[in-house]
Image 1 (cartoon, rainbow, N blue to C red):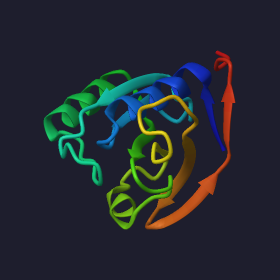
Image 2: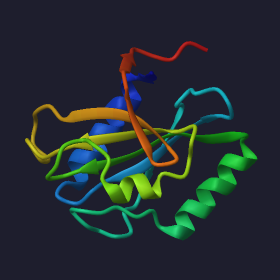
Image 3: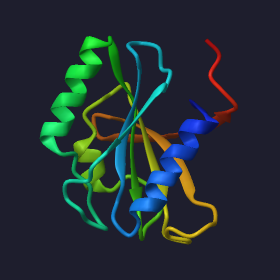
Length: 143
């Protein structure tokens, strides 16, 4: 199960809506081994595409250097789908390289960047196997 605080949930949804009709992407880092998504990092979709996302390699390398220095790891890897359901595509599954991460997908297909609900789902993707998991949104993460 993914436990995420309301502020981080809201930040991911806001990023997905703002970037619509292009896919949004980013990472939420947390202390190594903690499974606690604490530091929201909005990334640039280098592909600038409504059907594909790609982290900018320079930006991603800098982020990993920061995480190593801070003893962090990616707890959530998120991106949006703008025209399809919030389920990993074959490409998404092939790109999933963090076996401990929660892969969050937000679908903005129904309301785009307008007010209205989104589809927010989380998965574990290990060696090409996709497993959906529950998402618990809490007011804040206890220390």
